[in-house]
Image (tube, rainbow, N blue to C red):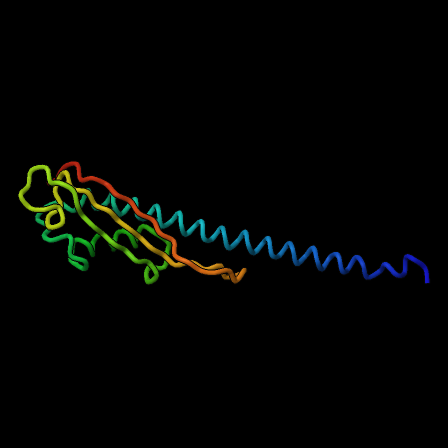
Length: 150
């Protein structure tokens, strides 16, 4: 047999190895891209939610610190409308604090100027194509209520 005849299968073997490596890199790029997109959506949603909350949590809102109250429910609804993430996977924590400017009520009972709001979001992720460990992405934003709008 000639030397050329013995090398026929070598190109096929090299092609198979190169294709496997290419697919692994390609799936990695897609998985990491999707995770980065979700993280960016999470950070943006936290920022937009905090911004909306400092503008829209003025009196007569009562006890906005209670999870599930109308005040916090409105904030969560706005966050969900501002993001492309799956709502059932998104965990939202809203806290108020600080020192009120001209109020006798604590910031965690009645958000007023001088109080701050902190929005913390968590969202699970997994690398589907690469079968790597999954985890939780988190994003947060904190802003101060500067003034009340009538």
